[in-house]
Image 1 (cartoon, rainbow, N blue to C red):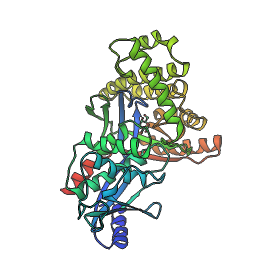
Image 2: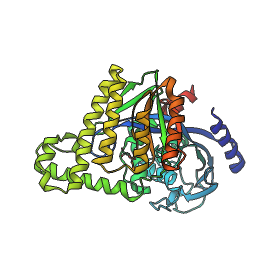
Image 3: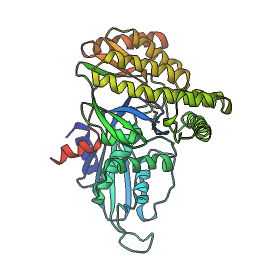
Image 4: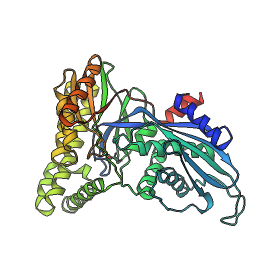
Length: 403
Ligand code: GLA
């Protein structure tokens, strides 16, 4: 058991007076395939070693009580009366998962009386805490959702397959929290596998696990510019994309989702959409092609080619998708100049957050020192950097535990 899990078990016992069962979910970084996951496209993320831990134990008053070790706050709900009622607060994530499971037909807890609102019944206490950097584009929200879902499913005595688990968590985020994200984050956080990146087809939900060479490291650099999916810019981009997709669907038979469209299809519709929609769709169409090329590069162990695709993907996020910012561009420019760096790009929703870099293992330490030094000299900001390896997702972590 990790230190965080042991700490949380202690915290849970102190607060709720009983032993609980612990579940952990990782964070994720996306190697390539950005903003493609809500138009049926391809993504290539991996799970990383940050964690959210959820400890759960039963209680007999029919209530759901969530305690956040990060915020030092408690939020409580009467399960039988559970409705969609976000509070604009950290507790919307776990409460949203509880609500979403109930939408799925999994009651999670049984009331002792058939009279709604009557006290009693089988409830639960849950303590949550994570070490995922917040607002960095590393999916602290999906990590919290999946850890919560694992705990609640165990409490309910139900197991869900990967796709349904990810869908339950995504519904919590889209419909309860109100952030219109795609499926990538919840899927990789739940289904990641150590030593592997995951190529996911977000239309068919088929995936392929791809090896990352041992001689390379994935380095994440945080620009320290905060990003949040729940705020406007992500939604604005999504609206522009969907407007463009609707035009192509209308004009070009055979195009259901942007994923089916070619640059030729897009060009043929140029006059019928805004310049913004054209540019956003161009990013997505070219990005889907880059993900497939990145797959080939990984299978061939060709990291030069993989890195070149990352650099192109960054330019596309910056110029066509308009989802980078000056600090992140500076971080990428500094990174690609360093010896041993194959490629660098913005990762996640954009508008700040982190870059992902592929670096030769024996150069990773020097890379981090140089990037931090040069970034601070250029912007006055101290960047946090993390040297990562692909980690297990929540399902694999729970299996290891059960052994
Ligand atoms: C956020 C969303 C994902 C995905 C990325 C961009 O992380 O949660 O679904 O759209 O942005 O690739």
